[in-house]
Length: 211
Image (tube, rainbow, N blue to C red):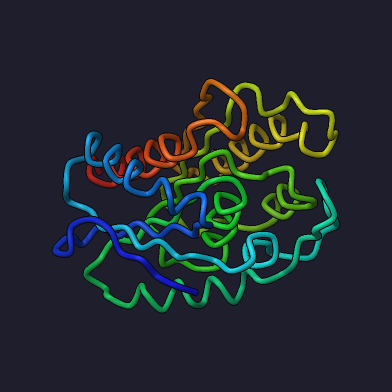
């Protein structure tokens, strides 16, 4: 898995983001948006995953669109990301878009290394995920959740459940006294992923700095 670094090399605030080729093409735009929100005091490590459905899924699941199933590679990817989190002087925030947003939320249940989670339009329709959240304790302090206001407008009943699932997730996090927000963006799932992800990381950074 290739790691690509952006931002200020001297910063101790580190954003960690699994990406695909589409995300990579938008990274400069995302970085500029973050700078507009919080300034230049951050670094971002982007991890280019090889197989999106396999590498970011916590467990096997059948296809929900097309014929590509979901694998169970998240554990291995998390171990690679954690290998970049060894400096105790740094503050680490994990985040991402879509399935990477789901992965980031899952990662915060597996490790206490992350100060916050920036989960933009996460795939919380993923079978069994929110149920799994209901009997586990998250190991982070700040969680940003967002969704497009048209993401539930789909003929696929599983994916259409994402609006209900993300609200259930927020309730579960608040019960554990996590600093959490759910923000609704305009548009469908394929709109403004760079801007939405930048907004997610920026919110978490501001919450960390204010406390």
